[in-house]
Image (cartoon, rainbow, N blue to C red):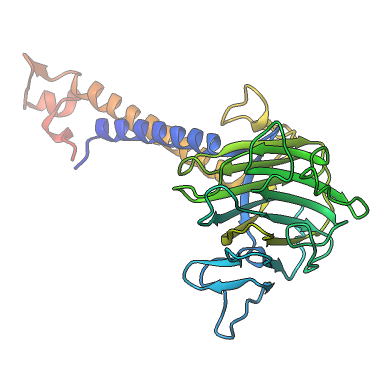
Length: 349
């Protein structure tokens, strides 16, 4: 049987553990500027994994075409390592989430040691399945394009492969001769071709706030910042797509998986996002989360239980330290039984 002292210690330990867990849970949230992502909800309509197709050799949420083909165990290959190929993969439904995170695992590979290309693109555009000359998609597009460019058409002060982005207005043509130089809203050089780890791109967009692009190519779970564009507005409800093209030089361009999340942000004015806030504090006009309420309830119960058992232990010790004892031994006479607090009839179980 657990003594009251042990119960008191256990209550205090429980209090400390819950407090530490609550603090860790609050620190685990992803910071986004002055706010946090409270949670993400995966969007099945804009995610795709192996085996990619159903028993009818189709996918309910995606279309693929041109030279693209599916290897159900590995990838969707947009182009093979052959000249003059073009392939695409497009979502059938527009992406209606206000804020979202898109993580794409891809692979660019081939036997070419020095000459390879041209590259592939990730699209968030108004139109879908419009084949054309820009990495397999139409020119004069409206929306966002992120190019994974592996072939330099001219000399530059930076190296290739390179990740570049362009915000198309539906009227401006892509500058092929200069690889879109001067048209990009952000770019970085990253040797994502023929790597020993899975290559991934992560796109995070918060409406009218920022666009953030990270890439994994050096080591597992090591994300490298590519670029971040503040105060950017993308078109509403774009289609998500991927395309690739080869010319005189070629490569295999593969899509291995796509995972898209809708991001639910906490209000910027939430007390927990302000410097100096604690687990117990919250804004005067803001309601706490159910998780926070649960933790607070447990903590209050733990403190109450600890106080109760502490008080009971104090009363017990006071009672046994009263009259009826001599030399540390209890006497068993009538005086001890009826007078003081140390009689044998006061034994507790």
